[in-house]
Image 1 (cartoon, rainbow, N blue to C red):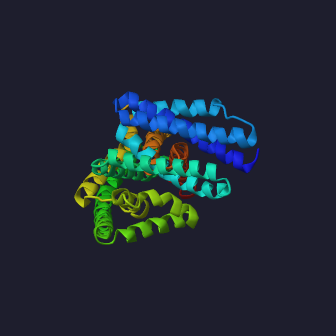
Image 2 (cartoon, one colour):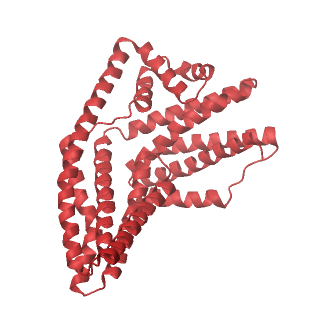
Length: 367
């Protein structure tokens, strides 16, 4: 199979899955805008399939892989809050704009195909803008959730690594539990201070960037158009293709402003006090799966090694869920992020437990 056909298949799969997800969201929310987006994605999928049929004499079929992905999307649409999923889809539409823009140059000598692909790109730009509007006003909630996940996962790794390391060296569960609790309290103060200072700096940068874009829109919108061109150039889109894409946007400064903000401004607004409070609270909560089993194990007189296994299992489960949510909020691969989180947990605990055992052997610790 040629590289070009692989690219077309990839585009087709993305559109099929997008159509399925938007359809699910329409059923869930009863919002007809999702139905319109779903129908548009279905049209795009058929377009990519028609290219495969015309130039490579083949049509794509939905195999087992797509069916599995559809089941995963259905689970996400059912369990994950709608705002989360819209935020994730917005990243997908943004990536689609860039990828489709790059492929345009390969069809420059086929005007009829070139124009159709350009229409698809314009549709995807409209999709990205529409999704951004849907979650407008929800940024604060999303930011708080990100802070909560950050605080929880950071605590999860740090405290679990500590208690499992001690479990390799000590036999008394209550001692390990108390050490973990003290470390969690100390870490909370440290995380709260750091989160406050980080959020304050981030907020200052964001507000400055937004004001700059808004001023340019009012005073010199042509500069915003130029900046949009520059951002697309950085992403690898050739100059001629960029001109074709942005031509219909020249008389729509609001869309240009939205695209420049989403593509250029990486910092997001944050309330320093809320960020610090959320991070601190969830840092403590994140430590509980690692600490509580040792207190409970002490009461029911369970072996330290068995308690450590329970703590690791609980923490790995929470890390898996946190990884899924992090991927949705950041627009990265859900599977990769979830597995990455679990592997970090298992790697850190294996390393510290081994160190604890070595310390016991070398230093002769018996507690």
